[in-house]
Image 1: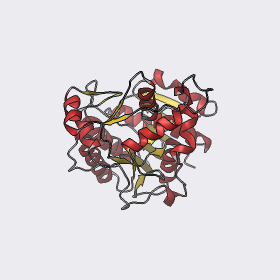
Image 2 (image 1 turned 30 degrees about the vertical axis):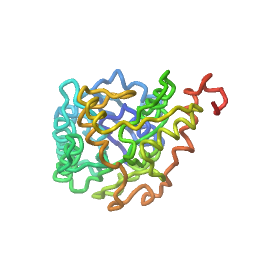
Image 3 (image 1 turned 90 degrees about the vertical axis):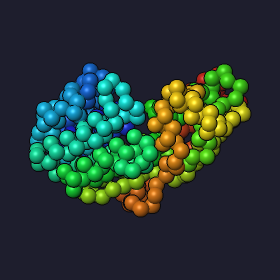
Image 4 (image 1 turned 135 degrees about the vertical axis):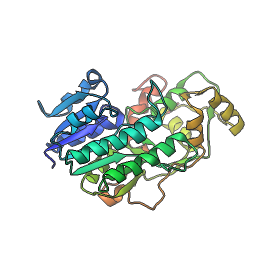
Amino acid sequence: MHALVTVIGGSGFIGTVFVEQLARTGARIRVLVRHATAAQHLRPLGDLGQIEILGGDIRSEAALAEALAGASAAVNLVGILAPAGGASFEAIHVFGAQLAADVARRQGVKRFVHMSAIGADPASESAYGRSKGEGEARVRQSLPGAAIVRPSLVFGANDGFTNRFAALIAAPLPVIPVVAPRTRFQPVFVEDVAAGMLAALDRPGETFEFGGPQILSMREIFGALMDWTGRRKPLADMPDAGARLLAAFGFLPGAPLTRDQYRMLRHDNIVSGAHPGLESLGIAPTPMAAVAPAWLARYRRGGRFAPAAA
């Protein structure tokens, strides 16, 4: 395995799982995060001294140069779902990604994996999708051998997806509104995504699309969440006009939703089949039903140790 691997943005939901898997390989790990004090939970994931944490921004050439010095491989996981705190899609997904690739090239980094997303397209109607597509192009322009990873909706014990909607179902609401009920997703387990990125380090120049073994509509996902939490409530499909109106105010029941995020929800989020997936890396995708009920048990009536049935 690579002697030193730099992970840019490794303290979040996906990053934490990736760092833990990477640590098991015995690699030395340097993690660049905006707030080092908020990333201390990473240290116990490896042996004493195995994981180094640096504070710095992906938009800072100096911070990137320090983080990538001496690294033989790097993984860029930095991404945002909505602009905030002066960080725009273009600044993070385009400028930041390009700068990380430029610095990695100058530092002689041999392997580079860049996390993008299904739906990345410079011609996308959403600013998120456009920025992800442009970011891919900039990374490849600087590092033609970079591997690109595009996951569908990622789920796991600490996600902001299954937990958020399970909490909505558990809330004292008589009816559960469902935005974009017919939009299809291919939810992929975070452990599989991390393992796929690890394998992609040794597959330079390829683009991967990671999806789970099932394609589910938003409505079907809500139905599954109700089964796993033992809570049955009527589902009300929200008309497009109503969803657009609520998105205009930046909020929908259960989760913040901007106008741009609503634009993304109008399109299926599934693998295209034009690129290799997890199976090509020797990874069998994990069904959501095989793992999600374990952490969603907390949302049952009576808590984790209550019967699954309502």
